[in-house]
Image 1 (tube, rainbow, N blue to C red):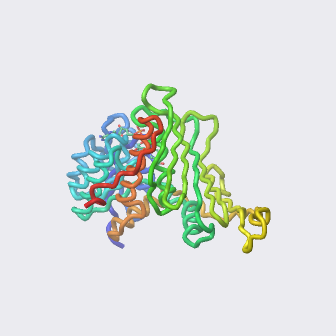
Image 2 (image 1 turned 60 degrees about the vertical axis):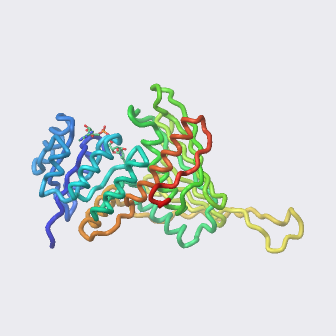
Image 3 (image 1 turned 180 degrees about the vertical axis):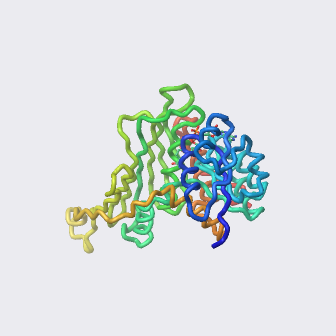
Length: 345
Ligand SMILES: NC(=O)c1ccc[n+]([C@@H]2O[C@H](COP(=O)([O-])OP(=O)(O)OC[C@H]3O[C@@H](n4cnc5c(N)ncnc54)[C@H](O)[C@@H]3O)[C@@H](O)[C@H]2O)c1
């Protein structure tokens, strides 16, 4: 058995603590260091993991010879600067979502990782969810027929953030799944939202995406809502599927529903028939997506594999987020997806 991979977690706040817990107990990994700019947070996580060194600054992580791979789970505004320092120091890096808050910054990280031959992975957690993997398998096998449209709801009464609005905080999850299932980038994006609780930070946003071939997607995100919903509805020509992450075990429901066209049309009334068949609830593994994600990172580092959620995927999501933000600022005007400098070159 080869040596465990030395991992450092930078940012040990609410979410970082979950990553720390996973890397501390993952076979093949060794939690070598913890880093947080807030001394109290650092002392708390270091107290729980005395085997890991407590470091106050990312430069100390960059310089640590026993750290091969680093996880950035600091506030999103700092993702770019932290990931850059770590990649430049030759570390493999896993950055929480969103990869960055600006397209140019995400492009720079992707380029840097490529130039240094380093792993760059982004925390698009849902792509490791057994329910989403099942859904992707259905789409790939053509079980749903032609994919028509997808909508998602990610709403609750929850943590009101100060430096990022509901799009940047929640929509990376929905967008990563939608781009993954449709295997395409949208043509344009429309977003409308409002900041009810604090000036300038939208609590509620409705995002519409238009894809090639008339495919559509819609994302509703909010931390100001009476419901707690984490749900995708996927409608295809043959079947419809609902992935509901709030369900304890029956997370995926497949509806044999649709509208069929008759082969030979005699009259308008005979042309279309509504099919409302069985509902199937497949058995889905209940493995923790975060654990699968952390395992995948370690595997990619060890085997020098391209992650399922690589930097390029992170960049695609940031491009859509940036277009949604631009539309929001223009009162809901459609914003076409700009091609990146790399794509133009
Ligand atoms: N994948 C998911 O499901 C999921 C869920 C929640 C949050 N997140 C992401 O995780 C990240 C952290 O979110 P959170 O809710 O834990 O926020 P948080 O505010 O609770 O924690 C952030 C921590 O980062 C530290 N930090 C900030 N700048 C730093 C720096 N320069 N160097 C070292 N430490 C620094 C802060 O002191 C704080 O302890 C965000 O990017 C968020 O989008 C992901």
